[in-house]
Image (cartoon, rainbow, N blue to C red; front, top):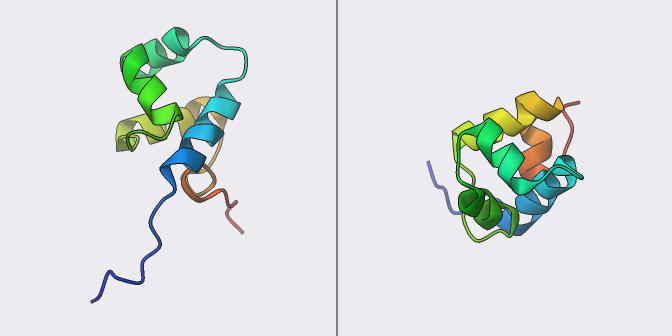
Length: 77
């Protein structure tokens, strides 16, 4: 099966959605709740690195959002 046509996740958009969910919460606070460093969360939010599955699941659980929405900006139909 070819993976060439599979859309690549937009790391910048994923980071912006996570940043938006964080709202007024400090990066340090959310990072601590997710079990990552503030620097790692900063890199994720700025789109420099892909979030780990653990970060994605933690954000989804904390903010009540689907993984589809966080990763692709789409809601489950």
